[in-house]
Length: 415
Figure (tube, rainbow, N blue to C red):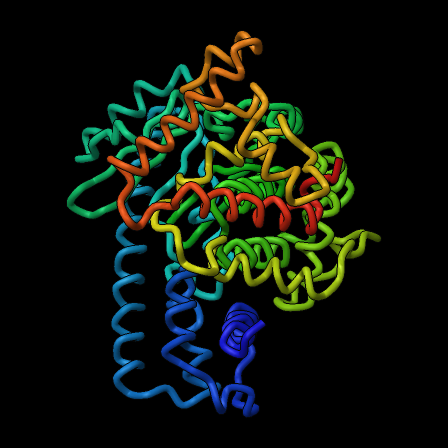
């Protein structure tokens, strides 16, 4: 890792663990660069207090940093108030629900309102969906049609910027063998829900063990499909440490083993422990499965949210290509780079998206779909693509690199 990356990781570690004091570690720190990485990872407000203690931050940069944190604090307080107002009405109507991520994870931070979150996720039974949608709309939220899916209804208040994602399934619209395994763990079942008391009031959520499984599942989803930030590390570290007395490692590793996530979690948790001070009990006899160099590569990938060269401006650009690996339709990769490239250029029916549904239903039409796909890409490049999107060759190279990383950290096996 580069010096600035090491400094950012160390600062994050000291911030979430509230380690004060100036020991000279940051004497030559690039504070402007550190702030950029902190902001990119949603941690600018979280790390500021410790940053002021461990180094000399230029006055102009410090003022900018403080102003940013104040804006985050006010915005998050406003969003939390809006959520609690909605939950009060849902409680009055005796509607069961589960809030997940968001304020539950934020409550594990030294200052919950410093954790950035632009949306609130609420799970309800499908039979209650229409009633809750009405409650949301009466509060000035409008449906976001382009983001709404069959089982996730996305609302936004244009005045405040707050989003509410109303789920009738925590698995959104994803389908595949790994989704069914996670579903079988019962993480979203009403009988596993608990009430958590925050300063602002009581919130109903998943049980601790179920929530941990979901947080890891959600992190892996982002990591595979679009890149995940360092905030996923801090969320999981703080959640595990706060709830250590109630976490059952046997349950957790059993689910991970069934999903094929064991090796990845062994590597991920090794970073959590060595870089961010997480309690070691969670490994429960497991140990990392790769070397330090690959762990550093994994950490750097999180620092830059899967885009170290900063080529991507839209997260969706690789989603359709990588989704089969996330849901369990593909769990292996070719050993050679050439074989992986050929596989990307000439995908199997299960790897095609909805534009080629005819080939998914009738595999004999697969060659036609390959030509169709190539023509669409050429037309996209000529008439639609803006200069900030991936070119065809860039996409091939990035997918090849991404699959290689997924394999090296334990999410895919070599064929």
